[in-house]
Image (cartoon, rainbow, N blue to C red; front, side, top):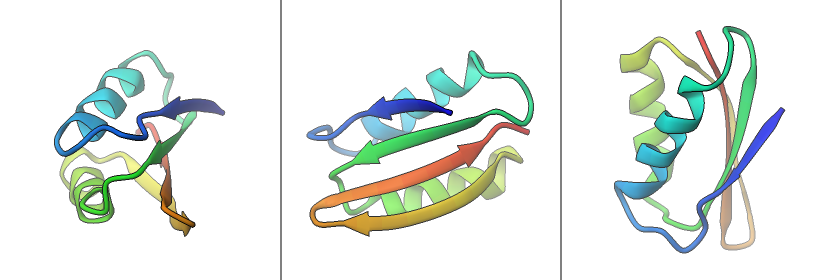
Length: 72
């Protein structure tokens, strides 16, 4: 699983960086994204629905949100 740390970045940068990272993955591979922007919860859910990629999980640990996306 590839990891991407975009903590400290504000919307829309976490999602844009995640989209760039997903381009380098093969279908079925997963990307774990660490984000501190609370808007990312909504943004990643909407992105997954619109892009066809799967949002495997979204959880919060302290001030950090951890989203796992699986490339379609």
